[in-house]
Amino acid sequence: MSGEASTPGASPRAPRPGTQKSSGTVTKKGDRGAKEKPVLVLPPVGEEEPKNPEEYQCTGVLETDFAELCTRSGYTDFPKVVTRPRPHPAFVPSASMSEKPAQDDQRLSASCSLNSLESKYVFFRPTIQVELEPEDKWVKEIYIRGWRVEERILGIFSKCLPTLSQLQAINLWKVGLTDKTLSTFIALLPLCAPTLRKVSLEGNPLPEQSYHKLMAADSPIAHLSLRNNNIDDHGAQLLGQALSTLRSCNRTLVSLNLAFNHIGDAGAGYIADGLRLNRALLWLSLAHNRIQDQGALKLAEVLRPFELTHTEVVERRRLLLEKGTQERSRSVNSAALAEKTDKTQTTKTPKGLSKKKEKSGGESVRKEEKSGSGQSPTQGTPKKEDPMKSGKGKVTIPEQKTSKGKGPKTGNKEKRSFLLESEHLGQSLAYSWSPKHQLVAEATETVNPLLEPVEHRDGKVFVPGNKVLLHLNLLRNRITEVGLEGFLATVQYQAQFSKSKSPSKGPVGLLRLSLAKNCFSPQCPAYATIQELMLPRAPVTKARPREEETT
Image 1 (cartoon, rainbow, N blue to C red):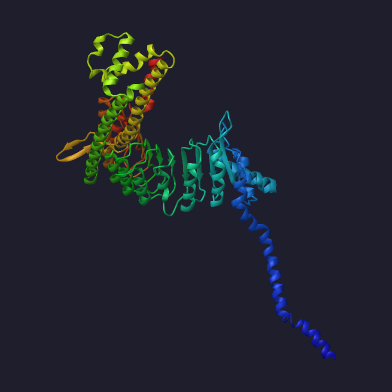
Image 2: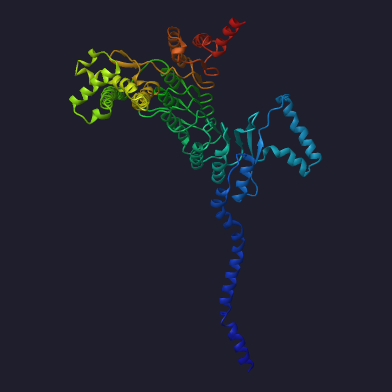
């Protein structure tokens, strides 16, 4: 019985299978218990990411919006938005700064408390520094430095940055950008206010060097800084193609900073190729690179008259043919528009019963109206000239005397409105037609210089060269006197050209050229001549005689 009692006791335990099933259920419960913590923490956060941040309406205050969106996205510790600190007027020089860490170390060794550590290293905490407008206190610039900007943070920025109506610049210094996060950042830019014109991505080397995506045709960026990004000749090739090609050109970028990179002669050649057909870039810095004489000669070549390649000559012929067809079609459309306006005027001038009657009846009615209106009978004698030439006067003058109520007002209004409509129609058509061609003409004339007046030498075609670039910085490269000769020829040509042409009529070339700290002596004759020629062209030296004249 004890065995039987034990067996039933074992049998209920056995079905738990015996203990395995129960252990399985226990493990499932354990799994549920283990999953309950992630269910309470992570999955709701994952569910709230697409919902709660979108439900929040940003107020335009970056500090409040960013904190709220971070908390709704599941962040417990996130960077704070602080005002960018200004340097103290009594700034300590570097000599005294070298002594300061020793004193701080002594203080820390004396009292190494948590408060002292926090106060010492508070500067290195991740923050979002903002620069505010002095009057309205709107966010003008954003500075992020030293901490990784992830995809989720960029998603939060895409919600709170568009509400900043006065945002002008975004500066990202060593934030660990990747090619993927750069694409996300580029997609964020069109959402921001149209005042955003400056972007600085420094210390963010990318494996694919996709910085050229910032210079797309629809990019709003006017000032771009890409310093210290390890850009080599391949990256310079992509940037040169973004500046201009035969069929595309960047029209918004005004300044480009490529200092402290690894650009060599080949990369400088690619940048020079981009400057051949670009007429928007005014400021270019290639300082602290690896450019030697070959790259310097290519850069100097595009700043004076240069020879067109075969493909450029073919493209120029195509543009000339297209321009001729556009002008012919525009003239044909203007003539057709003039004929159309004449027909509409002639069809609208006979009014009242004259539209329903025959030509003879209409002419007799017009004669009677003329006799009643007090006009001389000689005007009514020619039958062919009355409906065509004097029809304009008949619409207003007879109705003013025959019908004093609504006749003259409606006649004047109709005639004036018709003339205004016809004139407005002609102008609108002209503007809708010609602005397109004018824009194309301006684009081909200003951005694509292939349609500029050319010069033929020995069967070769030469264009005037790029005179839009005003500032070129080539400090601390590897240029020797050979490269200097190329820039000397460029500066001499531009100086001679500026004398024969007033500055108000168009660009005259470089106003500042920085070539110091290269592989040549400062007392080099070519360098001294360049300095003498560039001295009167500098804006600072030009302003001094004006101030003297005013005084």
